[in-house]
Image 1 (cartoon, rainbow, N blue to C red):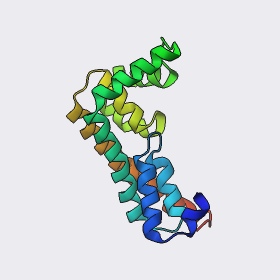
Image 2 (cartoon, rainbow, N blue to C red; image 1 turned 180 degrees about the vertical axis):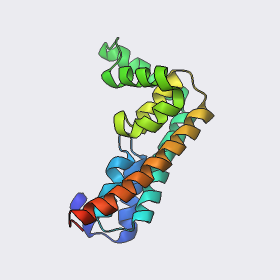
Image 3 (cartoon, rainbow, N blue to C red; image 1 turned 135 degrees about the horizontal axis):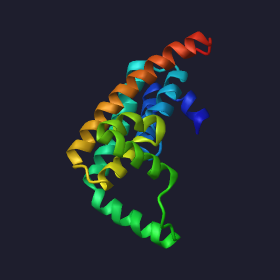
Image 4 (cartoon, rainbow, N blue to C red; image 1 turned 90 degrees about the horizontal axis):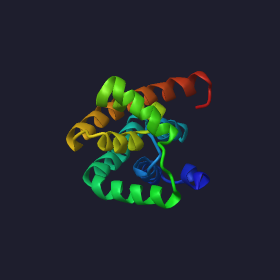
Length: 158
């Protein structure tokens, strides 16, 4: 698929980046460098990655109750009773820094989608989680766009 995406029209490349952004476990830390490597406009890549990832956060906020029920049933079916490493790490960040800390560290530590689910599980309101995740995504998108542009340029990859 990556070969097809590299050879495709720019519109289709942006569509692929958007879909990757909207996919669980795909963060701007992966999508932005990929789009910049494809030679697309860094600003367009950043906006596409942000919108796709933010859409996922909004959907998680809207359907949190159903997702939480599904997640609990799945964990019970698998016999998982203790928290995972990511959940433990997220809880430690949550206890120390609250939702702002969790949101701002999420893209590099646990992923924004997992952090959003955990923040909602820990008792944050949907609007607070969506708001802080939007701020975090915007900041990290800018960081990854700039780092990708200058990093790939410095390495003569582009």
